[in-house]
Length: 445
Image 1 (cartoon, rainbow, N blue to C red):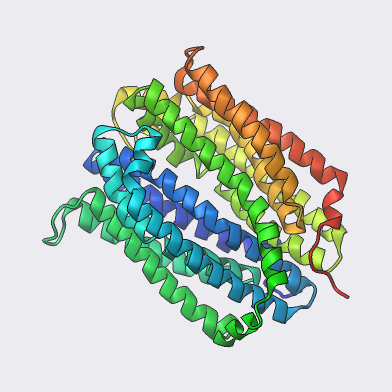
Image 2 (cartoon, rainbow, N blue to C red):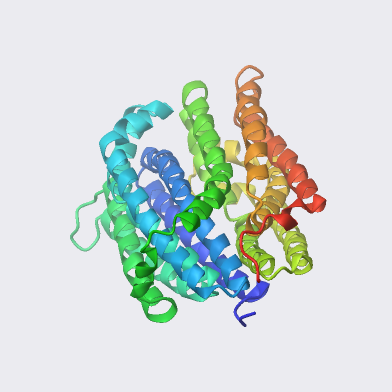
């Protein structure tokens, strides 16, 4: 195994990259919160549509990481290169199609969610610009997956840092109107985000074709590799479906808040959600590294090592995630005041921290074990469970607890906790069953 391919060396650059990537959105919301609470919430609403698009792109990028890892583990370098070429081709096509659709329907999409008034107008303006260029994120995801699967996690980390710095500088300049620029508000955030992504693509593609692959990999697509394309979709669609399903369910919950709760509830959810993403960034980073290693071990027919990697990753993730969540209880109000001084919003957000302990407990199992299952090629089971749990337990439960039972925003978080914990138990039972050991698509001869 390449010296870059161990859990620690893969995890820490992924962790830093994930933090920096999340800061792209965090800084957008933070800068806008200094400009206008409604503008910040509008961008948060629009970003839920953007998140769905990113998850569609993960159909390809997620499968790319799994198949390249298994191919490298099975010593099939040409197959890995062919998958890389397919990934970039499919990502570009899908990204351009979705960019066109959002450019045409950005306003109806947000209206469908229930956004109204200034939130609708500001969100539509943001979505038109960012969504119209969303194909850049599709390409970015694909190239990052290729580099990570080859062990080049530091590379994408450095590029994300550059993107982050560029985005932060442009956000500040365009939103607040520094150095003679007009104050562009939401439009400025959208332009900054788009320019940062374009810069990231240019740098990552240059690195990919100078250090890892050659432009000649696209010749491997003649004759067109139908079997590899089938595998890419066979792995990618179920892998992405669980996450896509989650985010669509979150859109429905957002719609419930718009229709039945208050603007303060939505603003509190916006700010609280931007805080808790940092609670599970460690788990997410460890899980992504574990997926690469599990895929490599499955390709190498070493299921014992795959099992050790996944279970060790789970234990470490649980300790870190729960420690952060418990510590946050003691500073919950100061954390909310990072975004706003409104006592009503601060109180609403602070009331969610204890419930979120149970959300993070279940979510850690889901993040780590599902990534382990995906790395092994066992992608259908998590998707089937997601259909039931996310819609019956999470979404319907959120409505019943928040509206008829009158629990409001805390009721929604109780439903989230029940969903995460139920799926977490089922994922662990699936892993313990060992059925994932027979799901590999590539292995040594």
